[in-house]
Length: 345
Ligand SMILES: [Zn+2]
Image (cartoon, rainbow, N blue to C red; front, side):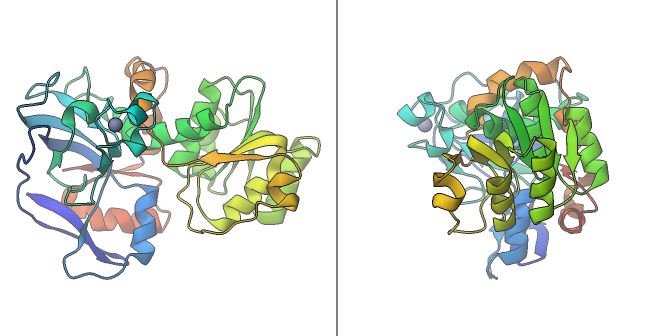
């Protein structure tokens, strides 16, 4: 099969790789129908250590079940399924608490001998717990929106849930990438009436307005903080959904959160140390939470609105490419020429 590997910063190659085979009775083999490139794939694109063997890439995909291990029930060959970005048994105590990213028998794609989703096929561990059957065909026009359930929609939703967004909370979303826009859509779905989107790419913030943003702040840093404060009578917003991951975004979050409020982070932090003391979080009683989204916990809840067209999260895809064009797809996203790139293997 063909599969994507990263060999070093900016060095993405699509190569021949062995076809995946069943290894455990709990495995399935899925032929990938749609995959995509994630904003978080750009972090290794900038700083992955160079390697001889390459690292498989991709953690978002939907596809057709081709083979099933003997212990997998509830799925059949030919089923169209979506996979969350972390695989999990969906039965352990953490999974039952809705924290599938900490599953006792789970893990992440493209790591520990498991392949990546930017490929023609993949071995799915814990297939029964991981895969969710989709009640549409592989020619459905809903595939882009359904694919967002593997990561960005669930991740944006996680940001809003962890912040306890509701009709009485005002919201600032930091970042106009796909996750930020999904955080806007999620905050709207949870009833927020005031959603301030911080982003400076007009085509993206326009889509954010379609998804429910009521205000857009293009300024960044101290200027951006001042603008959000001005829009909120000086107070800031009850919740801040941080969908970037850089220190500058954390500093903006601290700057725009209202006393007693919540900063919910879903951008993968590119820092280990950040202010949490009296002048930042402690003094104003700020709650800091968030983390990798257990998107498997949200798929069942988010799926109906996608199927009936109430929401169209797939609008975040603005470019579609074949598998061999994946290196160009990384370049386009890195150069901000594309918001999110859909891959048709
Ligand atoms: Zn589990």
